[in-house]
Length: 181
Image (cartoon, rainbow, N blue to C red; front, side, top):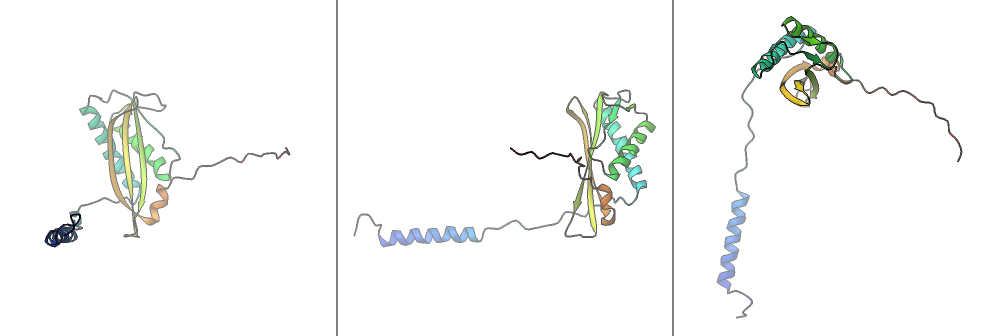
């Protein structure tokens, strides 16, 4: 018997152990796909729904600010969304109206101690081609620090999705003169 090769029984035992290990890996349980529990999700089908939603967001925002020590006497500015969609323009107006009606001090120009911003993201699903969703996030910050932040997800019909699309940036044509070198 060669000293570099183990005896046949040892090789057989090693091969059997390796086979068991590999068989165990091949039959290891994998996670099963399960669904989430059924939940309710609101849909936005009209500008009237946007207005109702703005009242809720304004009340929630004011309540959260109150809890962390910012009462209604602290002025807030509601920023314009960059490249606003039709929804963004209406949402800002609805939100300002709701805040003012609820007693908040809302300044027209930037520079207030609190800055309220919002962001929308449109989500199209291939599995439900007739419906889309919009994610709406509202943030209040002070000096670059997030004070409150809330996000909600709402269904909308695909026919209304264009109301949430941000327009492409507009570039100004600049005439240029070609010169030889």
